[in-house]
Length: 321
Image: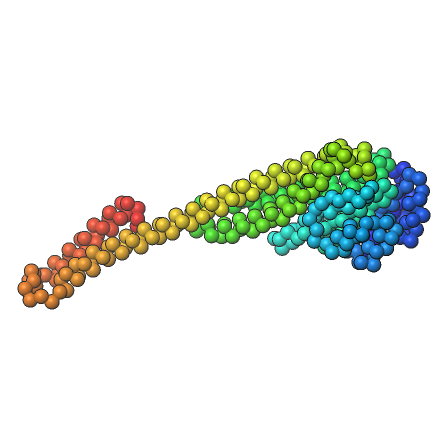
């Protein structure tokens, strides 16, 4: 679905135009065309391929989707993939942004995401001096908008982790903590898969041999790279803390199991003494001490009670009961 198709010249908006007129404006000096699509169909991609001369391998990747974040160069053109992350029903949903960049055009294709990036276009149009830098600055603005939307999600993950850390030593909460920690770890992995490869791509745009379309905009991509580096460091810290928290919770589960085992062993010891006395006096021998004694039964029960009471006191003192 077509969202926008606009031509710009020297940083100023020329016109919103139908896709059939793209070729006309591409031939104008100092002019570039910025097209935005959402969930593009193969027919729409074929039309854009013909209008901009897109490389067939890049178009194939965009059609198939499910790409890792990356930057690929095709002669003087570029193909950039970014992940759009949004939370839904306590799960992270992953969409994709495919950006085709040439000297006089930008084509952005948003797939499987409801995030609205119209603010990026409005921001660029408010800064004609920056927009005059051409398609390279538009690519920076898109990358910056995508990367900045990672920060609120990371902050929410940090808040969730802090809440879980406070529950670690709550009695009986270890198993539920482990389940929530693994859910949190899955979210961190999703974000890490979005951040780490994109940081590698941004590194290619801010140092060394910079693609022609981005010449003169390196310091802007350095800012994106710094944001990605901060995000990556935060995610690494969260992941390490989650690993430690899981180990502590597993230790708490083991400690709880040990406490239960100690209680069972203590009661088993007490009943073993009573069973031993009962077993001895229950033997059917004719000549046994106290067998004919009037108070023998009460005496036996008394010994069992005293012995059991002594063991109970010792186990309580040792905190087994």
